[in-house]
Amino acid sequence: MCLYRPTLAGDWDLDNLWIYIKCFLDVLVSQQIIPDDSIRYISCSPGINYVPVRSEAERQMVFTIEKDTREEIANATFYNELHGESEEW
Image (cartoon, rainbow, N blue to C red; front, side):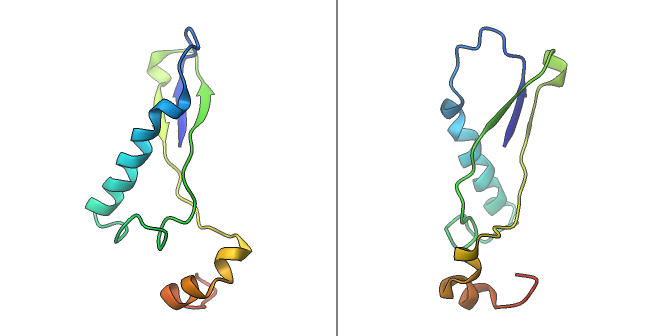
């Protein structure tokens, strides 16, 4: 997640926004985009990157979903049995 927000006093912590990531993953499940948010489908814990902007009008949260390309995941029997050993996976 990228958080675009004016810096203002700069006295707040990104890790206090963890609930937004939890809610985003829960929405993916509730909207049936993924079956559940276990390690079967979410193999890397999302984080938050701060991007300073000049005005409140530019404020936004941007969530990016990417394929996990780590060798450990691609070569794991668990994931190959679950998703198959295709090039698409």
